[in-house]
Amino acid sequence: MSKQRLIQRLQWYYPLERVHAFITFPALIILVVSFNPFRTVFAATYGLLVCIVILWLGQHYWKIKLYRLKGMPVDQQKHLRIFLAGQRISRLLLLIMPLVIILQYLLSSPHEFLSLLLITFGANIFAALEYINYYHRQLMLDTLQDWNYVLRYKRLKIASLKKDLLEKQL
Image (tube, rainbow, N blue to C red; front, side):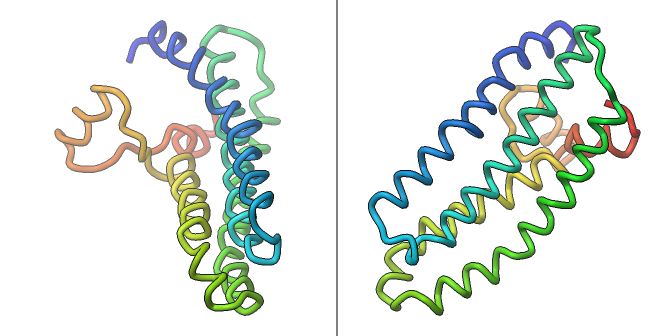
């Protein structure tokens, strides 16, 4: 993708990610907690909170990437530290997920746990997929170039953030 096309794409893409981090997922938390006792949905709420953390990191990454492409000054070392710390925090939050789900199971009746199983696993799996999408492999195939790459090389692209962290340059 050309530099100009990437700039055009990031001008709408990073604000969309920001909306998800600051509006969509908090609204989902409010919705889930409003209609269910908290003791029955804290694992789902936890998964949604982890999504928010990872989406915040993602939207921030795309914003910094856009600033760099436009030639705006960016403190690379500061932001590299933020993304590395974010990766460690996200990994820790993901490692805790099974414990939170087990605790949810132990504190809920079988009926309550099973009735909210889809929401709980959906939120937590989505958080794990977002982590993979930003820190390992690009899971989102939303352009023709992405699909052509997968069809040609029979694998997913390395995530942009991962490449930048390995190169120590945004």
